[in-house]
Image 1 (cartoon, rainbow, N blue to C red):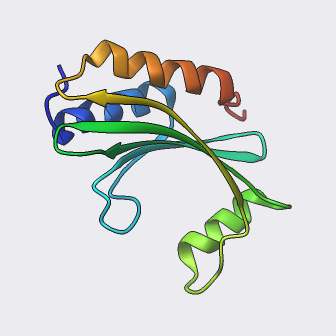
Image 2 (image 1 turned 90 degrees about the vertical axis):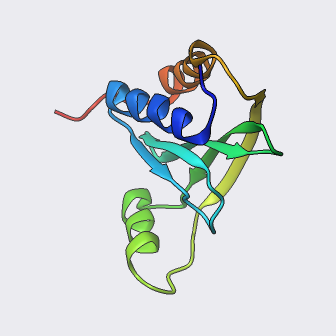
Length: 123
């Protein structure tokens, strides 16, 4: 059972290891969110688990599309001060869940998004 943000973090870190994707906490402005992120072709996918209210969270799928050189532009924005984001961001709220939530339901959401969008590893 996922009873708290810490429990959600354990589940998402496990999913990150399983799918070889990145897992981050508090990714924007003290939001206390958890986020899985990965590249699918030229698109950076982010699956955001944002606390909502006292005992719940929303799951949102973000897609960041860059005009050219997506990995370089993403790196530059993350590492060089004052570099603006050049991505076009699209998002879709997938689910709202109350806590406690079933770990199985969280993993079903993660599985359904990653399995469709993740590219095969480069060799």
